[in-house]
Image (cartoon, rainbow, N blue to C red; front, top):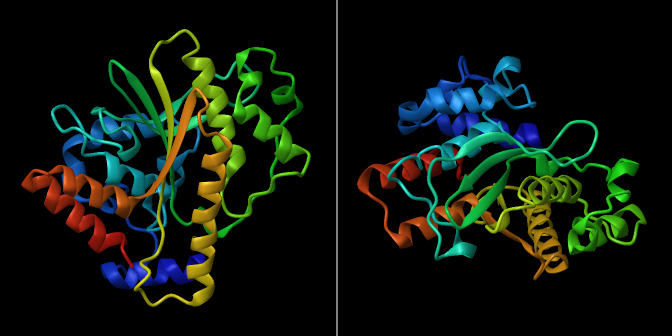
Length: 270
């Protein structure tokens, strides 16, 4: 299924290959203004996106996230639908958060922070097509601090015990992000939020019923996850990229950003 979608994306964008010649070639024109900052952020992440060439792929979730959020620097403010009173700018890509545990700390795809809130966003593209087996090391169960009393911890236990299952949503990754965010900002009075931005095909597109159903089931799992952590101290909300763009347009976009997101839809909406 992934190859099928990548092939359609290539045809839509007149690409000869699923891998472009350079990272910047996979970015929309307006991203060039902030590319040096973005490149530095990504280079410090543990995903090896630039060095490995993964970022050059038409199916790169990292490039998709950069094209979606990499225009909100300085006086360009981003609004998140679930946090309507908040404005964010100056995103940090591939930010590592300490979780207080041994091993690799979680990497957040993009983090926004203002005087009142922190919004950590996980960005997904075609990863949804490949299910992952849930896996937590024992040290997560041995957490003794306030995180143990959270709904996120409770859900982890239920997943480990096999009582809650997710087929398409990477719930394990989101829960690990929670542990990092909660630990990194344990002494902060700011509102903490985890956002989930994902791609899904256009319902009016030419995809098979199986792909449309897969993404519909993924969206249902997002809703299930949201209900399980509802009213926890760290909030969770999810939106497709195209829902976000629709919301930003309704909030009002300057001409340059309006044109940017038209190009975004031209590149990714199929």
